[in-house]
Length: 267
Image 1: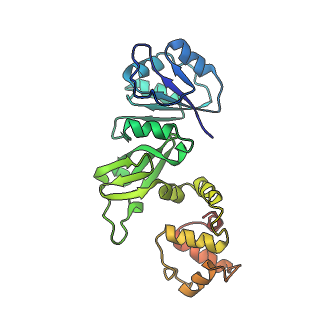
Image 2: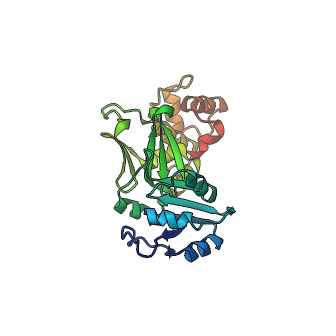
Image 3: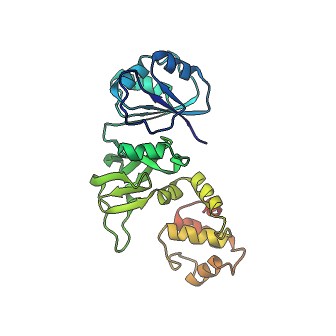
C-alpha cells in the first residue's frame, strides 16, 4: 500500500531539494496543513525538509490528535516539548540528528518516490548500548537488527559499526567495507516480506524442501549442521525425494535455525 506523499514547503522557503519528487500536495501555508490534517486517508507520509517547514507544521498541528496513520520525515529535528507534539500526531517519526544518518538527498528522493519504498532503507542509527542497528525503511517503519546478525562470512571483511551508511539507493547497508543487502535483512526479520518475496518468486520451488534450502542458506548453514539429522537426509528433503518429512525431523531443523515449526513453510 503506497502512501500519499505530502511536502511541507512554506512560501518563500522552498529548498528546491525535493522539486523532483512527485507528491500529492505541497503545503505552503497553515490553511494547507489544516486541510491536509482534516482529510481522511489510510496512510500519509509527510516530509518537512527545513526548519521553516517544521515551524509551519508545529504551529498548525491541532490540539487533539486523530487516529489516521500519518508518518513524518524531517530533515530538521523537533526540539524540547515539540518532540512530544510531533510524536502525538504521527505514528512514525524519522528525523536527522541524535545519531540518525539519512541517505543523500538524491537517493532519499528516489526511494520515497519508489513503489516499493517499504522494501528499501533511507537511514538508521547505531544503538551501541543495545548492540543493534535501528534501520528506517522508505515507509518510515523501523526495524532492529542485532550486531551479531552482521557476522562476517569466510573471506568477507569484518563489519565496522562506526562506519554505518545506507548506499545503492536504499538497497545496501554498509558497515565499513562490509555490506548487507536490504532484501536479505528484510527476509530475515520481516515475515510479511518473506511471504511477498516468496510470492514474487513463483519459479522457485515452493515445496517444504525448497523452504528448508532457502532457510538453510539464509542462515549460512551446511547440510551437515543439523544435530540429529544427517546431511544425506537434509539433501534428500531439499531435493524433493522426501515429500513428507517426519515431524521430529522438521522440529530439529526449526530448532537449529531458531524459528518455530509453523514458520518453516514461510521461507
